[in-house]
Amino acid sequence: MSSSFDVFEASNGGRVKAWVRDVPVDARAVEQLRRTASLPFIHGHVAAMPDVHMGVGSTVGSVIPTKGAILPAAVGVDIGCGMMAVQTTLRDEQLPDSLRGLRDRIERKVPVGVGKGGEYGKQPVPNSTINMFRQRGLEAGLDRISAKYRGVRAVKALNQLGTLGGGNHFIEVCVDETGGVWAMLHSGSRGVGNSIGQTFIAAARKALEKRVLGYHVPDRDLAFFVEGEPLFDDYIEAMLWAQDYALANREVMMRRVLEAMRESLPPFKTAKVAINCHHNYAQRETHGGEEVWVTRKGAVRATQGGLGIIPGSMGARSFIVRGKGNAESFHSCSHGAGRVMSRSAAKKRFTLADHREAVAGVECRTDEGVLDETPAAYKDIDKVMAAQSDLVEILHTLKQVVCVKG
Image 1: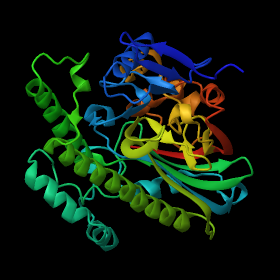
Image 2: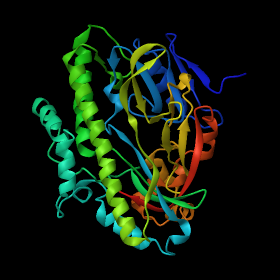
Image 3: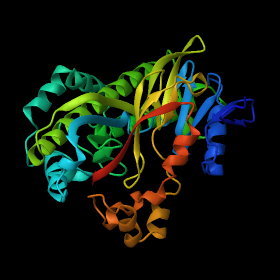
Image 4: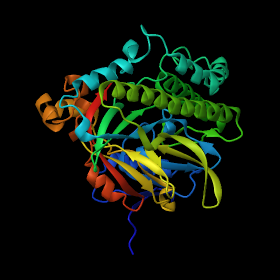
């Protein structure tokens, strides 16, 4: 039986196993994967998911297992970015003909975008959010990190807890294959996570210059920390903090989205299925009998029986999946459809008319500010799912009826 992945060889014997059958992959992304796989501390191989595309240092859509070292640029600056989905008892026939009112209410409940509009400003931070920030140790943890690293911008952390951000982040109300209604959202660690990422990426570059004379990495964004160094421990503490913050951020947002839905729709309860998963993070795991750091840069953990979320674009279907625990992929799957072109290329290629046609039937923005997120800028989600059929099984297929973008 033939394997379901392709193999790319790196110059020094490193390997990439890529689940990309019948999915377009940029040659530059393949070269970037090879460069990452050539690093001496890679455990086994690098795994590439079908949504793989160029990123900073390493590709988005890759799984990077490392032994004794970690790559802060591979984790990136939106540390803990991920998805949350909640199934409700609502049915599609209970939704009103016009969903503009629901979209407006969600946008009033949850600050969206970047800058002052993307945080709690005029409205006070809810007491429940403040309590969560303190009780989960987020406040105390951030105080420790920011006292040591002045580049970590702690001041906005509380004001941005429960806010969406911009770019490809979104809030959606979706209908599944049975007519059931779901709430789903995508966000990460906001400004504070960005500052943690930037601070330690810069520190890793400086450490690389000082560590060993003549040591070479193929890209300065592949600079790393070695286990046992103080910087390694400091980064792990800050990174894990940002991942906890991102989880909390999605919880607060989801609570407010459900409030907006309850104020706009018939009474409902939340069903049993609720998923909150990272797709941009690192954690300790055991693979091949060894403890390693696994960095998923745009990938979801897909252990045997574990639940995950794979979104399409703002006009395409999304999927609730169950992992198959595939060891070759380090128990991982894709985190979405994956971009097929850059944001600037999408803005040049597509018109607002193209975008409006692509999102017909979805209550969402159709202005210039979201043109780079138009569905055609992404890979075909159905081909992406077919390429990873040995990584996950599909439990639910969701189609959005409301999409809120930052």
